Image (cartoon, rainbow, N blue to C red; front, top):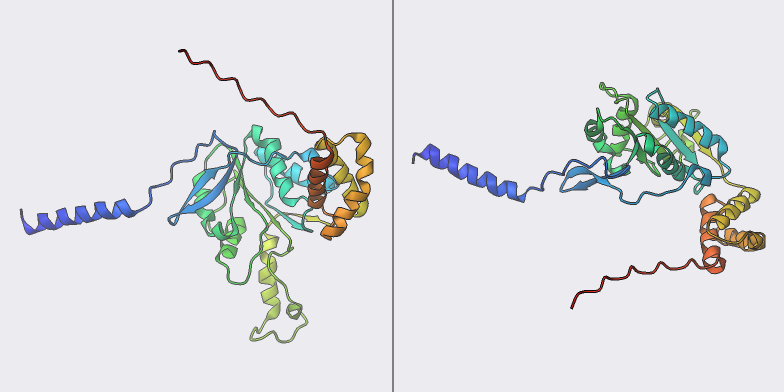
Length: 302
């Protein structure tokens, strides 16, 4: 064997050993197995992981946000029907149904081909890879970014801007981004950044820094704002969930003081707090559901 042949043989053996150390390629997702997926990283490689049990909340379960519900529902119906629609930014008070609304839309329109992919903020740099993976698929995909906010210099900020409206390549027609945040402009804003400020550290043009922050949120075509609930709305939501959890109608009115006390202890009258109260109250007062009997085992022949 010549020196060249021995070198090639050693190189092939080395490559086989290296390939054994590398993580296996992620399999193609089974698009028929689920309607919701998560983007996951393993060994530096991303893949779509099916969500076996997505949240089954319905649009009718979400109360006192009728205007927001109507606008995003119309946008989603347009998208599912193959017509033009906008990326959506849902911002405002915590616990008011922002993320639940997106999940409810999936449950409503999944039979018509809507699919949801949840992407963590730290994985937004992989958005181009995700979009490439689902391009030309017949389904309609919502890329869902929950509780989104950025600090200065985070890489996902630029990636999201490019996907929304800033890359030389246009986004596919079967992809929209729905994001929720407690911040209207997704980044912290400071009093000293006011346009009337003459100097902000070493920044010569502080107004341009503010424009940079606003530019991301402006790339969402539809803004939906959510506001804190008043006492009447909170009680109405609590009463609805008490009924859903099986509390008899005659006992729901008697739970009013307990619901108010629960909100006082939590320091919030949000829809989430109302739902948590109803779960607790129903667990203590609703009739217990009968347990399912285990299936009888077939007798083994002797």
